Image 1 (cartoon, rainbow, N blue to C red):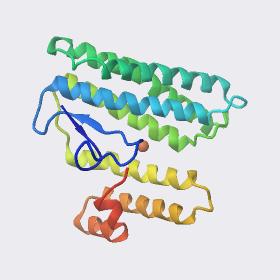
Image 2 (cartoon, helix red, strand yellow):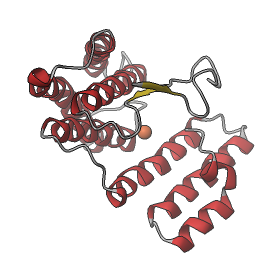
Image 3 (cartoon, protein in one colour):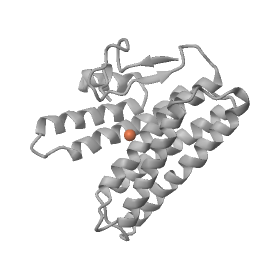
Length: 226
Ligand SMILES: [Fe+2]
């Protein structure tokens, strides 16, 4: 396994907040290592989703959802610590490891879907847009699918499918940032919207659109920051 920062070697963390990836060595197709690395990464991200949602569900408007999100935060952070502090599963334990991940993560995806539906129906108000809930749910479901695939020995990604899934989500991420910024931060708002446009072009995955994306946001495409 190796520690992979955003760029360069492990000494090159850009800020105290950068989270380096822990990934198998290039070319290592050991399914247990991939299961461990993916589950470790996903539980950390999903625990953050739960934490963010707990902040966006107010005590006054959505007390039940706030409590639920806080509970998911604790559970997923615990699961992350548990995975992080133990070695990758033995081959005989791999199915249980993957199934355990799915069993713990799927209810959180269902929770996000349920809350988004309530918001759309006007039965609940929060600071989490329905698009944010859908976005987080899709990411959670992606990790569930990934661990299910690994359980069955399928490690390889399909390039077209990866782009089709992640490019629109990166576009959404950039637009979320634009809307979270202070409206006075016009330069940063502009930057995030340019980045969102570049991701929409990259989604089409053609040479022409890729060149257009590089032209409109050279730094964002060649040196993505998130
Ligand atoms: Fe995202």
